[in-house]
Image 1 (cartoon, rainbow, N blue to C red):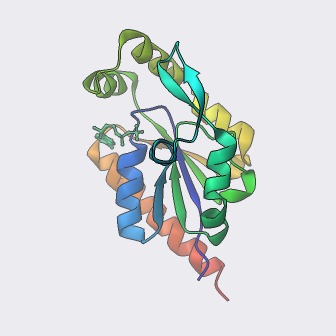
Image 2 (spheres, rainbow, N blue to C red):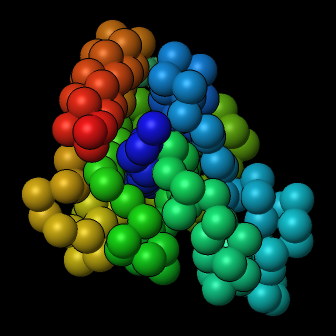
Length: 172
Ligand code: DAT
């Protein structure tokens, strides 16, 4: 059976991991967290002193994922999306969270002031939404609200329906 690949993107803290894991368990699709994948495989290319984090080796991440992406049925979670091959994804969801809600979530994570400010600005200026629109066909890019538990439930149900329809449309 053919299964679609789904990209979940958005500013850190908007709820990609929460949605991705729950969606995977309810749909049977595989969940891949690119941050975890990079950590496990040490897929890094240097260190960013300003942001105090390792720099992702994007080419190695793409190589690492290529086989499973061509098989289909993968949910990818990452706060960036312009380096993945466009052909990988059948649909792209950009999660969106109100600033005050996001601020609290990131503060709980223990982010320092600079990291907090940068991430809130990233959300205000819709950086990931613009990046997604610049990297994929506009008609496959969708924004989803991600503020409260009901949003999570709505998003899951909506995406499950989309998967079901996609599978129907691609079976013959
Ligand atoms: P991300 O993977 O985008 O960094 P996450 O899934 O780790 O984000 O979520 C960050 C925090 O927000 C985490 O404590 C769970 C919470 N959260 C996620 N989605 C939510 C929602 N729809 N309603 C309430 N809290 C949510």
